[in-house]
Length: 223
Image: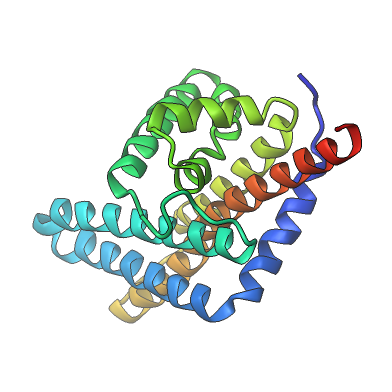
């Protein structure tokens, strides 16, 4: 296993470049993410009885946006999925559930195992959508393909996760003494957090493309 994080900076740069190249679509996605995130906070704060129902809708909205963003990146790179523009929400839920359970358990152990698993499974959703794989196949293929780049994948996963959680940590020190301040903080914190989530989604697709490009280059050189 190689400890090489050099690819992380390249993928991070390409992630922003790919979003900028399709800024209109990603602006729409980002706006939806902020709106649903603020809606979640509003329901949790003022209508707690409806929080569970909203959370289910919020989860599936995020899955749709994750699939949409991933397919936009693949399409922009000229990669035709096996089943074009099939969102496969049920399968993505399965990947997300196994990913969350595995990474969550790893984080409970010593944090590092969770970060490692997040890196090794980073490519699961792009593989699922691009290659029409089953849930278990997508996770195992991601594990296989990140063998030499696991450290770079882990760096990307950790950066995206920390970016998402930063507003939660900051919220411990932010005082919202009135309703206007609450609304302002909800908007600001969701803008930052959802930007981190979207970065993680696009970075995963970008990493998938980058590793495919490396493999193609190796084939051309070595035959």
